[in-house]
Length: 192
Image 1 (cartoon, rainbow, N blue to C red):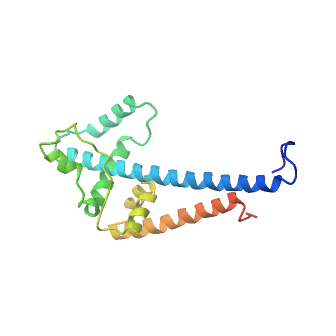
Image 2: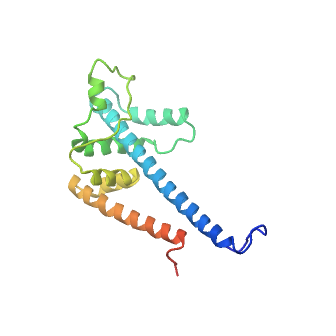
Image 3: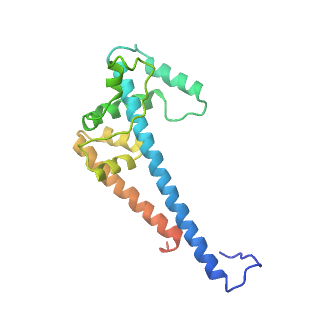
């Protein structure tokens, strides 16, 4: 630590170090929890956008080049927006189409689009993903894998069961790295 304010006596210093360590642990845990929440919302959003794009493009509502135009217009409407290139939007559609059999038991955007209660352009895309096909732990693993990793996994696997296995292995690697970093930051493990 090196620098200690002169207003603190040496007898107070151990308490201050304990406080710093406790606060640091709280900050690290909070950042981890926030990252998990953000990732869950991002994966959910991309799945739902993929569902919408799949329905609109596969049912012939949009012509050739629609996804490219949507990408361009989104980035004009929201300067600095990242993750919504034409390729990324197509990847969202693939993501939905690959995983829809797992999540099809929930109320879907597609059902809303086909119902007269939700005319096109007047529905909420961002519904939470639920399924009876995955355990709570498997669903948590699914949400803890970043979308870019999901995209890579789908490109490298041929079945959903294979993708599930890779997701589990990927999560374990990410989790172990997080634990090592948290231990190093908290001072319980020394990197030598």
